[in-house]
Image (tube, rainbow, N blue to C red; front, side, top):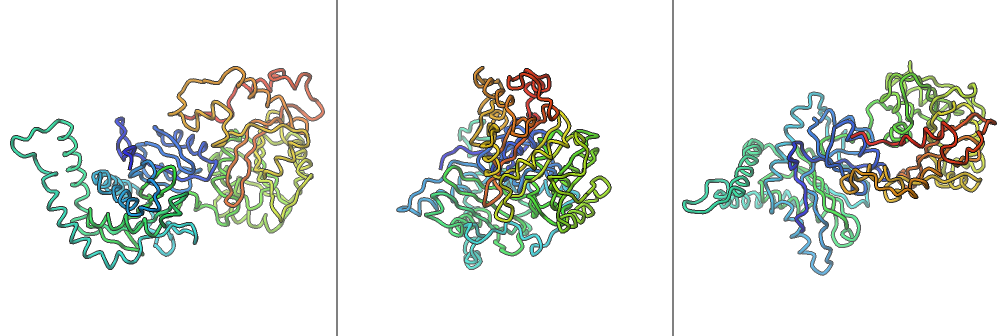
Length: 529
């Protein structure tokens, strides 16, 4: 296996390496968030995962809102070469995860223990209730096979024999042997890591299990069960740990794909995306928070969700931006009842007002709202069709000039608005990046800090701001393609350029109107680093 990897504590400036999983399309939100909340460095991404280095403690990392799960990184390497004719070679490559550099594993275990020890609010959740790393059938992710229990005694015996043979590596060099400074430093580092992990091994209190996910071509050759078993046996041989399938001290997560091989330790039993303050789940919390994060919510603002459903967007926004008044409307009594329960459970009933009303006839004055955020329903149950235009027109009416509107639209809704004469926005999600600043946000370490956009690229980006939707005054700003599981959707941001019926002369020319010029000069999603 290639030697390109990153170990915990490898940053010379200090800190350890972590990674978070994220919904597809939410990587730019998470990258910005880890910079802002954790002062993270060396931030980079691969599809569905964001890697970063930070000195922050576990309570600080728990505050991440756009992440699904949090892991301490042990190793990240290039993918295993797939060979259906030589399956054994693939297993040997997986064993090298452990055998080639045991010091990185011992360092990770030591850091893992420290992080948990210094987390004062760590919840002791029972395995039955938390059910960490539970996967749906067919996702090819499974814990170590029960055969490990049968082979455990033999593997532990072998590990003791191996440890006796390895003792010279931890001691002083033989007399007369030339040892370089680098070799001495490596010996000291490994010896120090061994001492840090000795307490867990000597007390015989460290039990583990492995969860392995295989995807791409690797999945066609080996299963998650096979990969987990190979890694589990290697860990028992190397360190003498015991396997425990039901309630282990330690979880090991391994993901093998065509693009990378990643192994890490989950730091929380309950995923970050499972909000404790939401009683009844509606829209995915990470999506709701991402929508609110680009809505430019400021203290003292009036924020509306005219199709609030269970109120997930309002709760996520109110938890993050407290000095704001929120209002939600819905035509369904059932949805409003559920939203009321969520507000009470989150302790936000005094800051969020709910009212019954249709999104096409809101009982609100014109230009009374500073921000509108809403998930526009779609699917077989909700066939809005051409009604999407009337919905946007009513939202536009109650939004003040210069206000922001952030909507979650299906691809059909977005296409319908474009077909009706509106302009499509440049996608700024991963894989469809057109904005130079978003490119730098997605992967600054690769693209570098300078703005390398050509004048023609900048002009093209500004021209989209000079176009409006069929509604007349809503200006498309940016759009992110995100995954909702079985389907995709778009987070679309608009700004109201002028009052209805008062379209300014020359609005089609970028920068002709003062408010348009202001919008063009300020990036909509700024790098927080």
